[in-house]
Amino acid sequence: MTVDAPRTAEDVLDELRTPSRAAELFAGFGPLVLAVALLVAMVLLAPSVAPERIVERPVDAPAGETGAGS
Image (cartoon, rainbow, N blue to C red; front, side):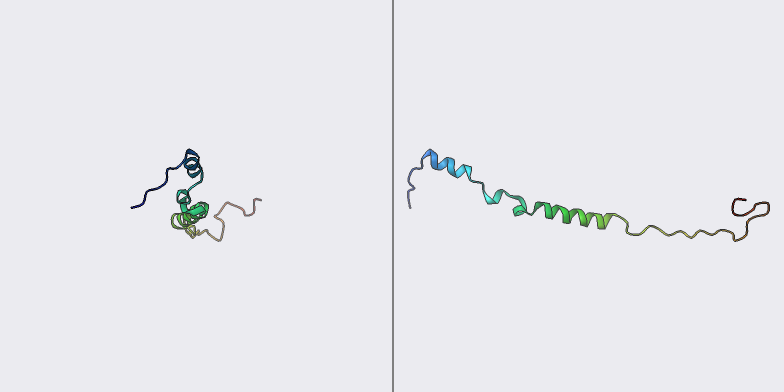
């Protein structure tokens, strides 16, 4: 059993002033993790191709209509 020497107020304050590495979320890679998460969400949630619709129109204009706006 060891007994630690009493610490001074300066030692305690110096220890409290130094930031802890464990306090950083994702060790500084937070923006990268967020970008990857947003990219995955976009890929999964956004449709990649619009639905195709086949539009059928008559080749000849109906009687009484003229073509090309004349």
